[in-house]
Length: 629
Image (cartoon, rainbow, N blue to C red; front, side, top):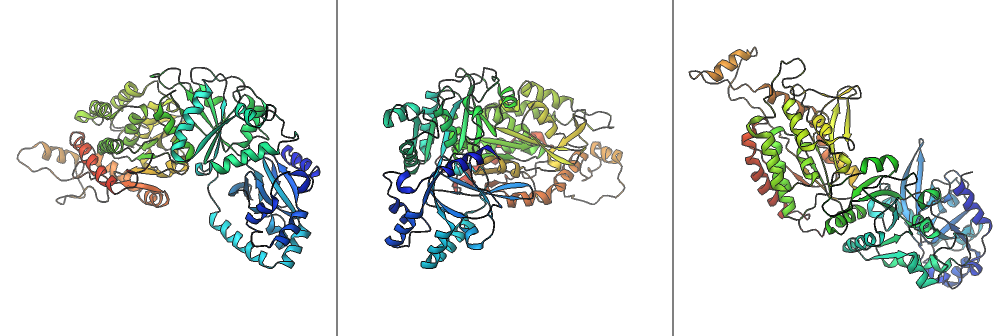
């Protein structure tokens, strides 16, 4: 039997009636506000109250198991529950239940086994009503069935929220991971940043001891007299949008309670220190019963202002987390970005491929910055991967343009021809450029979270680069087939991501957890029109001679670079439309590229200003520009 299930059953055996177990609670008032019993008269409520029994379930504990027989229902008094459905060996979250909700009634009505599993997200107190008492209630008060139908409809309408959606986060535990910086300052800055989005309070063991008594904070979960603490924490969650639990520096009972109460655990570490053998400190020992449903994220704090992000690869190898952040001490902008991720407001920017036209992305980013739209997460394909890497490094607009001018002036990325056995270009110049500006950087150690996309030619699959060498990942993402050589990776060959996902809005959407998504899309509906006919049998020597001859007009046949690039776009066009329709894109930008060719790098620099003005115009009617970030 799982330990959390065994612990729950142990609690069940020791239960007592409400009047004995919960002193000072106005059970009648609570029942009147509960979704199932609110319409009943006082006499009926008093009858129900006499039959209720108290049950306590620690966070992570199982209340109901799918497939078990239904012998009772529960009313959640304090805490939170999460409902899961197991299908085909996988489990998905259906919904979360807050105080006043009823659970377990369906099995009683249908005489069928439990349809779903229910686990506690917090330390939770519930009232248990036996099956016989519920059936007696239905017989005497048929209106209860009407209320049950309303409850089921409401649950159907609110079901299927994605598991771990950041919008459901209310409680955040801040825990030292190894030798961490000053957690008091970190918590203070985090509370200030979260306060922009709702009332936020900080809870620590010292605060609990001062308010409720010196021994309460460190009391074991099964200690007597914890009703006051549980009620106080419940009231805090009722009165505030966010609660930040400051764990103790050592693995105390308060640290374990903080973990049990958390929707999100932030593990805060000194970026310059290697991860210790037990990086989770007090959280590791109590993981099975503490915060089993909570998402865990790593926060790395560099030692001084101005220092570069570092240390993430080693920490991510040692500590299993769903995301990580680099936060500079006392830098408000970093805490505000962290708060947006915590609350599901982080804004993601996706940059498509488009060869030379990708310089338009620089104008888009400039306009977003001026309008105050944060770019908290950036991802891209091909040239979008290159430009996105500049942003993720922390370069400002002027620096981004300067690097782009160095890279793309005089078509330097496209003229390094070689004998065309593997590709038209050896890729030497583009590789040298990427190494100059990106070498030595890991994707994990960028200030702004970043990914890029390539296509696995060997396995016909999309590759999302989120870890490892930045220069190598970008080089793979922009390996235009036939133009640049593929990139070798563990025996496989990687090519330009645009072959399979030229606008990876689906990848970004899965990582934002509810925040707005901005897409800069350089795909064109019509491309490579010919101004005059040419023969189906076409000699490249003839095209070259006509181009060089001052006496003959040049043929209008497209160049091989443009044909290959357009073919790449067409291959992804159908799937791209489906992804755009499915993704929750808040602002879909399609900067006008005009007659600029895909490899016309000189003309492409004019697109920076064009895209900048276009984006500013689009933002005038977008709620993003006026949002409270």
